[in-house]
Each structure stands twice: as structure tokens, then as C-alpha cells.
Image (cartoon, rainbow, N blue to C red; front, side, top):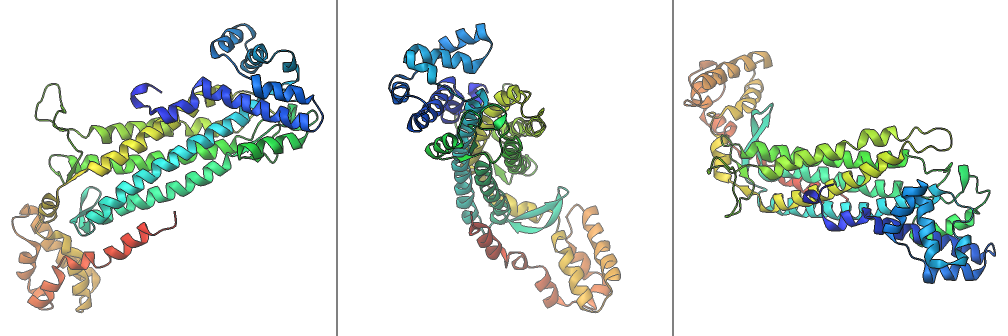
Length: 435
């Protein structure tokens, strides 16, 4: 992932230095358990712990010759450790190191993603409470539906990210397994006790059945979870992009005093962060299908998954980390325009009260079919007048309505309070969900 869309804390997880440092710790922990079991001399484990190191450039140089990264790594380590290095990696296979390291990196990354989700949730909660009672129009198909509040609108996104956090916690647990079971996973040359020891020291769990690799359905679930998170990011980003349109302008990304919106048009204030988030979501979701396809491997192991994971692992997680942090900042500084929301809400002359009128007429004794035709007839006149004449005015000219509904009844119908009376209950339910 290019630096423009990277945050150092996440990107550093996938640097060669961190990867090889994990490999070295896995080898060291395994050798220490072997020494405890009497399989290798204690001096070998001590030498690896005290002198174990590697040189990334040297590893790359060796790999260019031997075409095998684990062998290149072990050769570099041997150059630091000396004679006792012959015991390193005893009874282990490359996947024992690579897949165990993969689990460590995935759990490290998951912790950052969970923390990022907390930032998004905190930003949303702050704005939900701020705009709990801020009336705005709810839309379906992009068309005015019925009134809602901006706080309630945001609470739906809060609930989505609360679910995302639960899923990410579960996904972390899903990939928190290691394998040190040797070739084809039989433990023929490496006791299960070694695996259990390394898992315990790393805060992970032994894989149930590893063959020669950890089953990739675990990783598929992890990346699928990132894909769903990406879609939730895009969902709110698209909402903000729509609300920022000049014709709508109910909310707007913060525009820095020194910021420029267009190289050609000085007046522009574009939703660049939201559009960027939509693009980042595409990158993250792009990892899902390859992760699913990695599940099917030949027999006990092949490496068709390897190149895929070397690409999607950093790209998807660095993008997700970047996107969640950018989203948290966007929400925190989002400009909200309640007056415009109210103007838009009333733009179509009270059409939003059509359902309440329909229900009132049915309760007054008119069949639903007839009531629908009566209200729709007046509603279409409002559309044709472009909102210059209100729904209530047209209804008051219709004797079929006035015979059933007097002024007091119409006053009750054309009242925004009906749409907000349960808002607190819904928002409380979202904010107090177990996350």
C-alpha cells in the first residue's frame, strides 16, 4: 500500500523487520521447549535466545540464490548464532514458522482495527447525542419519505459499526491459532508439547487439525469481516456525499481555511474524504474473493495461497486502518445544517404527512383503497404545484376529507412530534447494545 494511504502503526506490522522478528521468536520458543524436553542441548536454546538475530539485506541476498525465504532466514540467523544453529528449526517445516507468524500479525492488526472501530463509535455517539432531536427528511429511493432525526440516521450507522466490532473480535479469535506440527501435520518430528508451549507464550491456541498449513477458512472469515466493515464505511460515506450535494446541503465535510477544492473552480468544496472512503472500501473488499479461493488447497498443502496473502494481508488491513481513522475524523468534524434540513423537510408542502392522513381516513371509516386514492389525488397536485400549495390545503378543498376530518384532526395529523416520539428509545437501544 502506498504511503499516502498508510498509517505507520499498521504498516509496521507488515515490514520485513517485524515479520522476521516474529519468525525468530517462534524458532526460539520452539527450541527452548525442545531443550526443556531434552531433545536438544540447553546451550543451543540459550545461544539462540542471547545471540539470535538476522539481517534483512542478507536474507534477501541469500533468497535470491536459494529461492526460499525460510531457508534464507535460517542461514542469516545461523551467521549470528554459530555452531548451535544446527538445532534451530529441528523437526519443523516452513509453514510452522510462516503460518504461526501470520497468526501473530493478523491478531496484531485485529487489535488496531478494533481500536479504530472504537474511534468511529465514539465519534458517532458524540454526533448522535448532539443531533438526537434535529429533524430531517428520511428518504427512500432518494425521494422524500417521512421525517426522522439526524441523530437517528447516525444511530443506524453506529449499530452497524457496533456489529462490526463484535465480528472483528470473533475474527481475531478465529485466526488466533498456530501450528508447529511438522511436515503434513502429523507431529512425527515435533511433539505437540512444543506447539502448545509456543502457542501459550504467544497468547494464541494450537490449531485443531493443521495438515501442513492452518486451514484457510479461518483467514477467509477474517477477510470477509473486513469486507463487511468496508461496506459499512462506504454506506455512511455515500450518505455524506449525498447530503453534501449543492441541491441538498444538509451536511458537509469540514473544509479547512487553506484547503482548495478545485484547480479550475475556486468555489468548489468537494466531499473528497467520503469519496476516498468509497475507493478504500473497494480495495478492502477486493481481498475477500481471493481469501475465499485460498481455502481450497491441494491435499495437505500447496502454496497457491502464499502470493495472494502476501498481497491482500497488508493492502486490506492498511486500507481498513486508514479508512476507519479517516472516517472517525470526518464524522467528528462534520458540518451539520439543521436549518437546511428543515427547509428540505418542508420543501414539498407537507407531502410527508400523507401516510398519517391515509391512516386517519381509514380510522374514520373509509376503506383503505378509497382513502389511498383520496390522499394520492391531493398529493399529486402538490407535486404538480412544485410544493407551492400544501397537501393540507388540497385536502381541505376535498369534501371527502373534510366530512371525516375536522381542523383538530388535521392539526393532529400535521404534527412532527409523531415522528420523534420513539427516537430516544431507538437511539438508547443502539448506544446501549452490548459491544
